[in-house]
Each structure stands twice: as structure tokens, then as C-alpha cells.
Length: 365
Ligand code: F6R
Ligand code: MG
Ligand code: MG
Image (cartoon, rainbow, N blue to C red; front, top):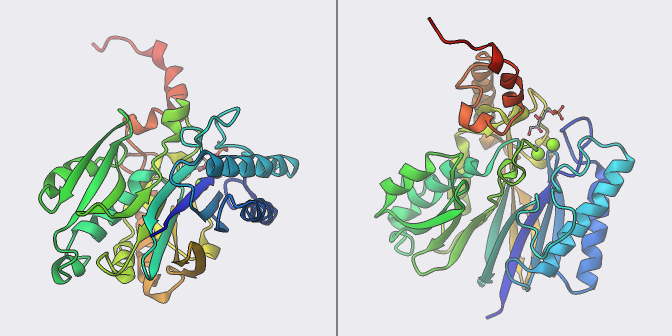
């Protein structure tokens, strides 16, 4: 059986109307670049889109995860896009390209990467999730519910292929260490970690037999750069059906617009809104954070589709709740818990403001 690799590599290389949306010319330019790569047999197929101000390169190939050829293709595409973004004076042109030159693997250079290598099943539905104005920990809650919570996923109880549970690979983004935990046996330990969304993030999920099901981009730009350079706006790949959660079970988790870190200046908690591609526009207070979901069939390594999942009235209620929660959170203005806590604010511009008060503090009487 031939293995294929599904890669999403994404970056904010500049946007139109502030930190808002990718310019249509940039999408065209990225498509041209990936079309050439198909002709050169670097990749099998591609789909280019944007989630807000993030340019998303969705690709299939047979080069495996961390292929320097595929990563270089993405890096060169982002460089070309940045050149045009600079000519157009797009906002924050080149923002996520933190390195000067490509060094073999795009991870750690700024762009976000989610990759999954697997044997294509007889029918292979794959779901792509793309978020804007938040960070990788935003996937913790929904992925836990999809792969570990029987109140979300009926198959965990009903389908004998699923009821042994799944293994979660958790990354400590601060220490760059990882740990594998099995659900349901170690569910409480898993929750003890992933409830701390700014530090412990779900990186991969596998079946008990080691079949890869999920990959999440885990870049923390601020930790790479040591300063605030925009949020990490993560992406995830989720395989579905036939012994894995059904597409509807995967999507069900997004009917709850949970609170995520990000929003304005990457410094606020706010609810994440599930939307179609056309509504992935962060307007109000640079948000609220958005999530888009596309479905593909992988057919002999090619991408058939996509379908859009959240462009659907059954997510209207989630969007309505999201708007209500946004009103409620916004009324806190600069106060926690709307504004992030001091740990997370360390990588914003707030410490520079606090610094100027340092000398004015005196011993309290
Ligand atoms: C969040 C984000 C925006 C900016 C905000 C200020 O990830 O990108 O909310 O932080 O618009 O941007 P500057 O400082 O570039 O004016
Ligand atoms: Mg931006
Ligand atoms: Mg973004």
C-alpha cells in the first residue's frame, strides 16, 4: 500500500485592510507556485485558501513528513508572496517569516505546519481545520471531546473499532518535551495537562494500533522570536469515518464556541466562531477568533473537494452564542479574565509599558 502525506503549511505574510484578509492576488500567486510544483512532481495536488489573514497551502505528496523539498516549496512560495505583499504595501508584509534563509525544515522558521503520513484507505475523508486570531491550545478542548468524550462522540460507545479509545501525544511548548497518554485509561491525567492551553497542546492523536488520525500545528511564534509577532493561528488535519469519529461527530464539538486565547493583539480571551471561508474575516475587535473547516476525499493521492462544513445553518446557534459571549467578554475591557494573565502577556507589548513605571514604585508603608 502506498503512503501519502497530507501537509498544510501556513503563514501570515501580509494582509489587506490591516490584519484582515489575504489579498486575492496572493492566492493566485501561491496557486501558480504550487501548480509548477505539481508539474515538477514535488507534490501530487494542492488547494490554496485563506483563513482571515493567513495564507494556507494544503498539499498532498509522497515525500513524507518534514520533507525538505516540500517545506522549501512552501518557504519559497511565502517569499514570493511576501515580495508582492511588500509591493502592494499590504499590512505586516512578511510577518511570519522569522528566518533569513531556508534551513532544511520550515518548522521553527515561523510558518505553521501540520502533516500526516498515512496509507490511503479505500475511501479517505480528511477534514482540515484552520483558525485565525488564536493559538494551538485552542484545539485542545474540541479534539478532546471528539476523540475522548462519549457525550460528543457516540462511536466511542457504539462502534467496537473505537471503544478501546485513542492515544494522545501532548507537547509542552515551553520545555519542548512530549508525552503520550492513552484515553480513556489516563483521561484525568490528560485533562490535568491540556486544560493549561498555553503550555500543553495536543500534537497528534492515533488509534491504539498506531494509525495516525490527527496532526495539529504547534508553532508558538512568540516563543521562537522571544517577542510578540502575532498569534500562531493554528491548523489541524483530522481523518474521519470507518472506525474513526464520523464527520458529524468531529463537527459536533464546534457547536460550543469555547473561549480561546488570542483576539485583539493576541492578548484577550474570546469565543471562537465557526464560519465558512467567506466569513473568515476578523472584524470586531480584530475578531472574534474564527475557525473554518473543509472536507476532502483523498483519491489516489489527489484532493477531491473541498466541501465547506461550517457554512451551514446548523452552526447559526453557535455563532449567535459566540456574539453574545463576545458582548459579555468585551464589557470587561482591559480587565482579566478578558485580558490574558501575566504569563501570557509576557510576550506582548505590555511589559514595555510596565517597565516605565518600575522606578516609581517605593516600599509600601
Ligand atoms: C492579532 C493581531 C491583531 C494586532 C492588532 C495590532 O493576532 O494580529 O489583533 O495585534 O491589530 O496590530 P499593530 O500593532 O500591527 O497595529
Ligand atoms: Mg496578521
Ligand atoms: Mg492570522
